[in-house]
Image (cartoon, rainbow, N blue to C red; front, side):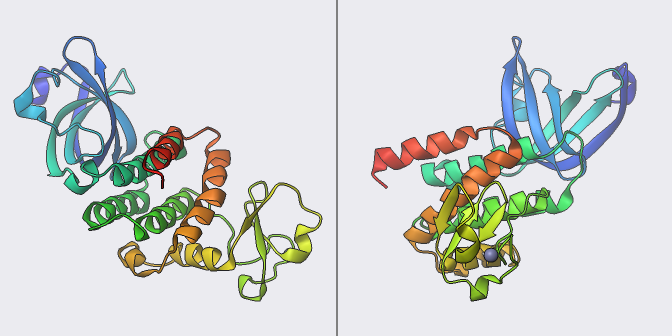
Length: 268
Ligand SMILES: [Zn+2]
């Protein structure tokens, strides 16, 4: 269809995109919330998407990885989504509740940690690689929870919220020289045993856990499955990262509640 048919629309744009959310709008439309590689996070209307199986069949589902084509509108922040063509649906994530919870958490962090229309290609590429990694893992436990925490730390770091894990935030003593560490959400990093005496609201965390997380901030995402996480380290990492994420995003992450009820339901 030529541009002439669309009054008030500007040139057509195209970008790889990950669908963050799609909500019904009126009789037949969907409002789609996407994280695109070229334009950052944006929202758009997919006209007739609820009916037009041919154009959008499943491609606007949560976490679908698509090629998005859309028109900018002169008068609105909402773009007009013209087509979304599948690149991947991440079937492994859809089949496994633990994987789905992890992927949802990352999507929620990106949703609330990025501004609309702020292009952030490294973040997009990292999220995509992380989703592909989670998708392909043959078994989730025990390594998966650790990979999830490494991804969480990495995504937060790319958004400008990097926890300080390499040295005491007060006296700069290096992690390698610290025997017993605590994490301070308020200070955004670790505190050594000496400085801990005068600090409040500290969360105890093992040095082994901190080393794993610190490596996760630097290593290639594809190398994450090689790190030897224990269940204990995964739990400790969650205990410091989840509150840290929520403080920086300024809100409660709904996926965390889902994760807690999931863990209770399966006794994990
Ligand atoms: Zn210290």
